[in-house]
Image 1 (cartoon, rainbow, N blue to C red):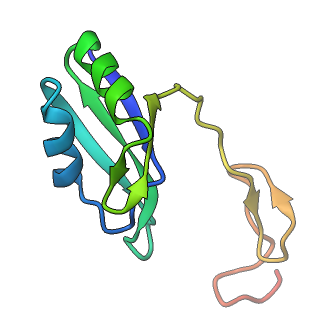
Image 2: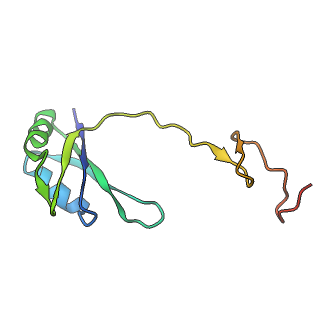
Image 3: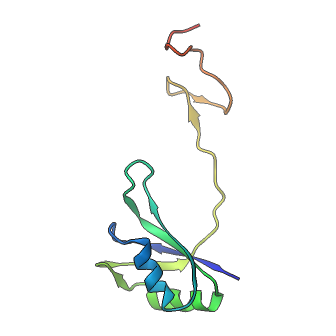
Length: 112
């Protein structure tokens, strides 16, 4: 069974390769993801590492939590599954609208 690990307070320059190499010292790394801003592609300062073996993941969490990586003291713990929520949608006047509800304007921006 695999275990997903949260790694927080990362240096913005820390790469997925850096995390993969670091966690590989404790066991097989199944996947690594450094979370980035969708527009700027800059790191958000946290990421996730999935390890194939639970005991290896626990060992990595114990040793690496609080350790300095790329000049930052990182937070390492088991990731929590949080349900994804839908973001509220707004029309062009800033009013909330339900999914599928259309604006009262045509493509040129004029009212009907």
